[in-house]
Length: 232
Length: 232
DNA sequence: CCGTATCCGGGGGGATACTG
DNA sequence: CAGTATCCCCCCGGATACGG
Image (cartoon, rainbow over all chains, first blue to last red; front, side, top):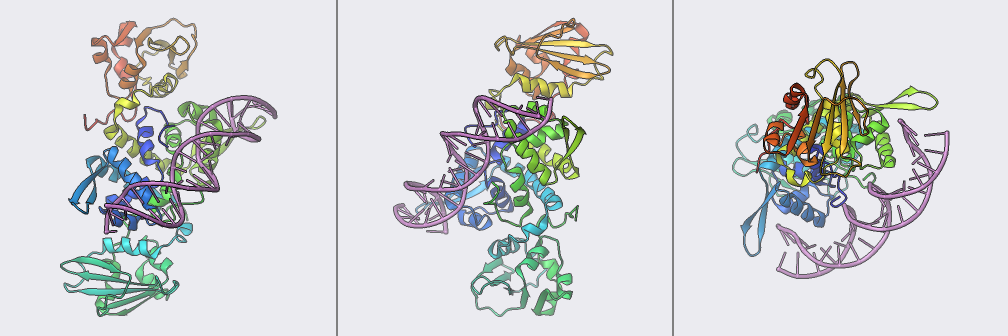
């Protein structure tokens, strides 16, 4: 991608030189979403190898899109934060996502589900103001997955915000959510709703009735969920 | 690019799957600009091999972004036009270009000049309403280039619109424009102006005073010229 | 936890030539 | 003019293992 470039003076080509590198757009999406630490970024781009992630981050730094901030010496610890140029890219990423939501077939992509990634995205968008002002634990049970990755705990606490566990934290569970991973993914993407899935017995809620009843609200959806699909 | 995909349900990743293929963004830019014929597209993406262009067009057709319309049988002749999904991508391309204009260093890209591409872009954007309602011929002379590609003729005629020649069409020339290719490229990109280049003797105009005086106006600039650079 | 080093294979795509 | 066909190289990036 580097040497044999487009060699065009057009700004579109100049930007495409950067955005065209594999994984870069997806990585930028994760950076725009707010992840700053290497391993947090990995969670958002789970199929990207750490070597490549490191390389891309360096490239983005060279291009003035990402800034590397020392958080701690020995052992060294860095934050990767967007520069102003990087934050400006947020609009580009947003318009790409809106287009994707509108026009790309969703059925095939609903096969590419990944519970870790979904939970990671969901955790970030929990609308903490809507939940009661006490610790609330929600256990998600994906019945279609093997025992190793079927159970997830989302813990909301007023002071710490939302937290995510893949092993039982031991708290009393306020709400159990049981469904297929695909159902939960579709809800997250705005293609389905909690109540519809519930009525059609694809999703079951057991526990605190208030927390259950407000799930569609405290469950912040994907940033692109609001944009309707076009063709069927 | 095709098989080992991002495998994410996120709409950004879904769209990036398409946009990430090499040359696709640049090709879409040319399609958005209005080119529909194979060889017109080639002119807008001169460094792309015809084999790859053909392949990308097929992919875009499969993805519902481009529609192939039969213009004539035997020999077969097609128009490649954007579908509604493709036209919607116009906004994405536009936002990419705006970001590029704002944030990508222009100095290196001003080394990647190409007279054929520049003239092709310029021809498309001539503001024909501003020129007098008769045939107007403007000869561009790039003093820094070899004789083979130094001379270009832009012919504006009220009925046919703007036309481009790389060989002398034989018409009387209304205006001679002499400058370096880099100067003309910078003007086209909005980084320089006709009058500034003229005052600094980097550009010389000889001929019809009215046509010369209005050059900055009839010369439609790049669609991104209006967006200012940020950093110096 | 936070990355780096190394290896290796597949295929994307550049170059060139050719045809209807 | 509008593409196909072919060849072949190179380099991207996936996997894995390892250092700080």
